[in-house]
Image (cartoon, rainbow, N blue to C red; front, side):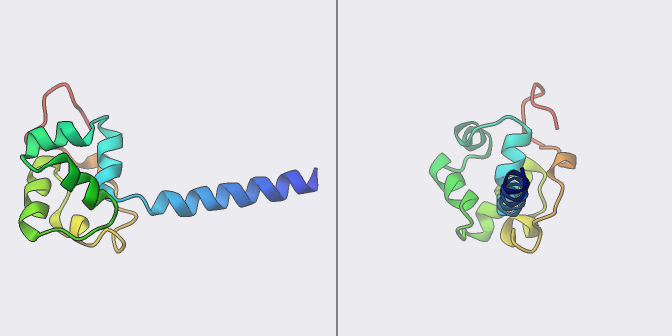
Length: 103
């Protein structure tokens, strides 16, 4: 039983650490039940570029601004996701999202 408790704590701790490593844009997409192709259609940025950004890769400021307009996430949160790991994306409303998608 002690081993079970130790393993459970270990897995919960690892899950929480990995949870923080999810890009705010990806968390927003999960929260709004939207895929990268759907966001690509809305924002005009290719789906591959969106997935690239979600993997913590650097993009141009222009792309960050376009995604900010499409999602409501502040550009600085998109540019520096590690510094804004605790940013709450649930309050972000998209300007260009279909009415069926809600925050």
